[in-house]
Length: 174
Image (cartoon, rainbow, N blue to C red; front, side, top):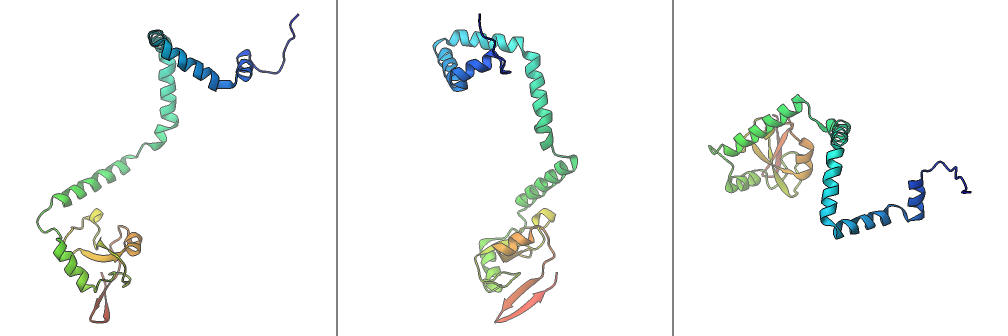
């Protein structure tokens, strides 16, 4: 008489334990699929046909569990669309774009210093009125800024500007 095993596991679970788990089973399945491509394709098609509704339900569950969390609200979509439209409009506006020569003149006016903190560090172009808020990429709207100030300012346009000219520093309120 066979001995009854009462460990709470199914026969399949016990087989997996005895036969090195999934790795061995997967390797054997992969080898079979490689050796029998027609039979594998036929079996796959049969499985998909017999389990279509289960697969659809699994896809729905995944969508509501994972993807639905990432869906954007209407306000977010509108903000993104308007932002893209503004950038596109500014990029296509060729009425008075900032040239490299004008940028060098602006840097000379500010004595190669940051317009916000006055430090002499590598400079970036910063828009006084941010592009995202309707500012243009023109000589009247661009000032030199260090990376720290440019990153800190973000898209706020109300920071005071310091002009360093001839050794004196003057603050321009905005």
